[in-house]
Amino acid sequence: VSLETGFGYKINDHLRGEITYGLNVVGVEDKAAFDDIDTNSLIFSAYYDINNDSKWTPYVGAGYGTTTLNTDAPTDDSDTAETWQVKVGITYAATDKFDVFGEFAHQNIEATRINNNDNDPIRAYRGQLGVRYWF
Image (cartoon, rainbow, N blue to C red):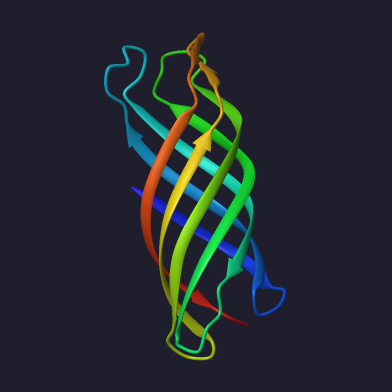
């Protein structure tokens, strides 16, 4: 399960920024201490839109923030870590105020300590479809 929602600001025809909240629920294999991880991320991102003469606009973006990991471990079941992400995507301008987009994202969550164990960084890859409304 994955969800992302946010608010942004279009600086000019090429640059925009946003703050997003993301939730991911992930099953974990080969971990004796816990079976599930919920990640809650707050990320500040900047995007570069590659404008052209069509309704299709490719873009690239990068962001930095924090992620809290919550698990079903019996003790010491959560930790917070720095996170960063990069994205590539394409937007379709359905109307002047409404866009539809698809993107591929890579998110890296730095090392954590849960259930008194040091855990390696988490690397997540995801494809997303979404809508964007411009005020």
